[in-house]
Length: 266
Image: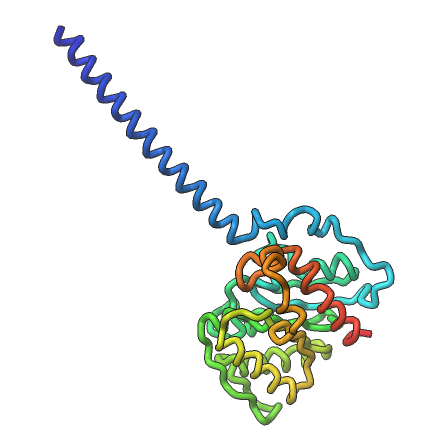
């Protein structure tokens, strides 16, 4: 009887432990699925704007594009990388539609300001100096605004050591370096409008720098057409207030890039 009784107790303990294990496993799986869904939504995995109809595969090349055969460097962070569009950005669409060679030097979370090893200032110097790009396109990074990087001032002289720990100094360094290294046009593009006073000041600063350096600006921030999209279009074109989907790049931003590049590189 004692043997049977002890066996029953042991069996009961095993059953209880199995139930606890199943409960813990169920909770763990729920958390994993929830986290996966959150990350998926954040990265645009489930966004309609990243469906197959907006893919590179379903994008046709322009046979007589004036950019055909051009080489363009794209320097930036998450928006240039394609953070909300599964790694596909306007640079990749330009490569497909206009048959360019895109050198995409883009790392998410990075800043213009040279306070980290993967800053724009640091990474532009790592690009092959022997290539012959037709243009350098640089993103006015939203990360500098998010991290409240110091704006700095535009230097009066061209023959100075630029203070790359400020936004102004970093931008001037990038322009100077690109012109000296590759002797090609430099184009900066801004983010479409979102709620950031610091970024608004960065856009104003960029125009001050343009007066000195004669760079080209693709200004989504102040573009009425870009910023007048409907709420339905916004949900299709963006995964958040900053990062476009494939549809956003392809239908919303690409025509603006093409218009500018056709003019600059004609």
